[in-house]
Image (cartoon, helix red, strand yellow):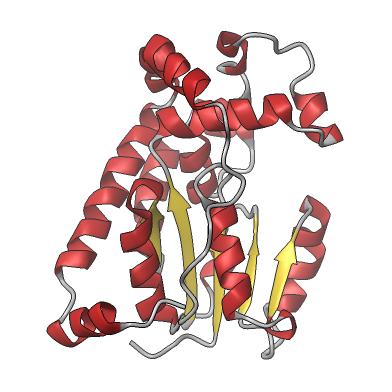
Length: 245
C-alpha cells in the first residue's frame, strides 16, 4: 500500500502506547508530528493540525469520532490490550501517579474493588473506539456502542494488540514506512507481584465489568492474525531482512 500522507495514533492508556509513542517520535522529526496532551488541545488544535500538510503524525489520548476517519487517505491506528491486564495496570499506574488530575480521580479509592466502579475500569477501550464520549449514554446503550466499535475496527489502518506487540509493530512499519523499530519498553509498572495477585483474585469481577472490551479484544486479535497471515511473500521478505535500528 502507498504510504498515507498523514496518520493518527489513538493512544488508549496502558496498552503499551507510551513505548509506541517513543518509536513514532524516532520516526518523525518534531516538525512532522504533533502530540495532543489535553482535552482542550484535542478540541481546539486537532482540526487545525489535520489541515497542515507538513504534519505527518498526530497522536494523543483521543476519542474516535467520525471526523477522524476523513479524508479516506488518512491512516488511523491504535493498540488494545486484554481488559483484565489493562484495568489492573491502569489501577496501579493511577495509584502511584503524582499527576494532580489522577490524584483527584483516585481520591477515596483505597482498594481495588472500589476502582472497578470507576469509568476507567468499565469497557474503556470499547468506549474510546466507539467514540462514546457521553458516559451515561454509553452505559445505557452498551450493544449499540459495541456494534459501533466493531464497525470502526474495520476502518482502522491497524488495530495492534499489546500481547502481540512485535507483530503489530512490524505491520505498522510496513504500512507507514518506519525504519527505526528498536525502543526500550516505556512506562512499565514495576509491581508485577501485585499485578499477578490482583489478576488471580479479581479476574471474574474485572471480566464482568468489561464484557464489551472482551468481545472487542477478541475481534481485534482475529483481525490482526488474518492480516498477518495474508502478508505477501515480498512483504514477508521485507520484514525478514529489515534492519531494525
